[in-house]
Image (cartoon, rainbow, N blue to C red; front, side, top):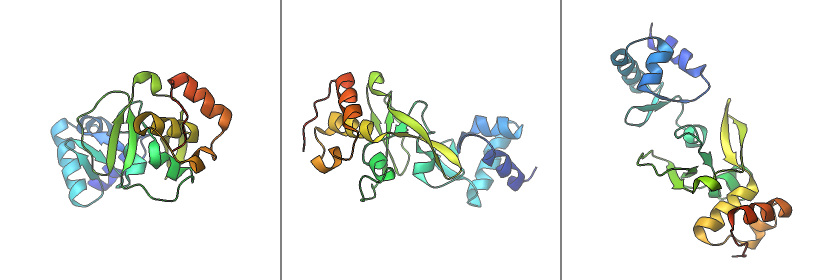
Length: 177
């Protein structure tokens, strides 16, 4: 099988992110051959290396961000930007993870929240796949939890009842910044 046929097999999978073992399973080859396929695809810019042993079919961190770690989702300013609440493009995609990670991926900031605060996100279509993204109210709660406040004009754009419900659930105080 050539690398182009292998790439098509990978693109048909549900996730845009793969480790070497997943590439080996998808292409039905041994791990050593999967590494070779990954290297050749990376050299031709058909596949992109995110971290050691981790590859994606795209360079867009919004697209692959919530696939890197299970139960993670896009939140904070990244989610507010994608929902059209703020206009400034975040420098990095902020991903909430339920457990601290040592993984480093360019363009991604992993932010650890307690497991009981990992809720309020949904799957939304993005570039042919689905991304996990916080709803507006949960993104606001996450910001307040980590940074203390958000500007009042952002609070006005949220569903007040849902925001209050999330605040009670997380014991976060809704103060205007």
